[in-house]
Length: 332
Image 1: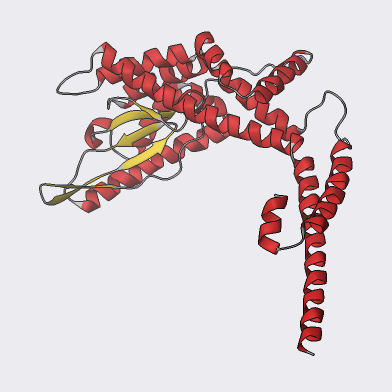
Image 2 (image 1 turned 120 degrees about the vertical axis):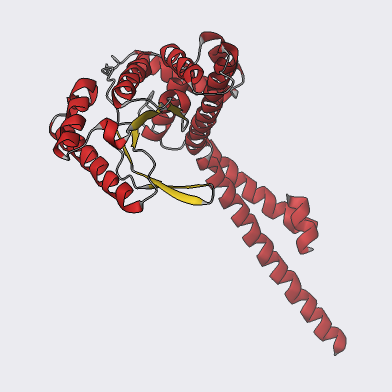
């Protein structure tokens, strides 16, 4: 760096050597000072949270994949993770109840407009509790709008009941009864509306942003599928994988998927999700550890560079003044 500054500023080597030695000596004293840290053995909250997330991602892998992945980590990350695991082992872990309940209902839902054979057709559509409920296609928009209003009444009734009784989301039979009661109060039925329902569920822990979509079926059938998926999601990846493979093979296709093809789709989604989760977790850990290990030295290096730059500037000004004096004397 000193050589580059000599070339760029044109200062003499003796002055540069003196200023560089002085600045480096100050920098060495600053670096040798230990930056203030928290109590011995404790991690900052940000670093602890990042390492906990990385641990969760690794624990979601099978033993072979986990071992292979850890071997690719940088040494300081492996050391930090080991220290975190040892420290966490001294504290009794908080037991998290395994809850199969799904997220609150999706808000909204609007009429589905379909363009087919140069004509517009319309369907009612709402989302709630990982379910998508639609009506039969209609040519007249007014009829489809009326169906949309009925579906929104169904969704509102389920959401209202669930707000006072969250356990409702675990009771498929109760949800079905509420839906049918609202349809009856509106003077219609599933058959009259041509209702069709499918499940569209997240499994963020295992699949990231990918959603599992079931074949379209009746309201009762979709609720049963939803219950199985919720239970599998709360149990393990292996259980969820088996359910998803069965759903893919049950899709209405001209060429039904083979077991191998369905497994390939599911496993590829899992690998992509793990890759993304691992990348984000490692990035968070790296950022947290850099903040702990490097930031003080970077600040000291910044002070060194600034001090050297100030010394260089003063010497340049002094040399420029001498040159101007010589020029003035020569011209005289």
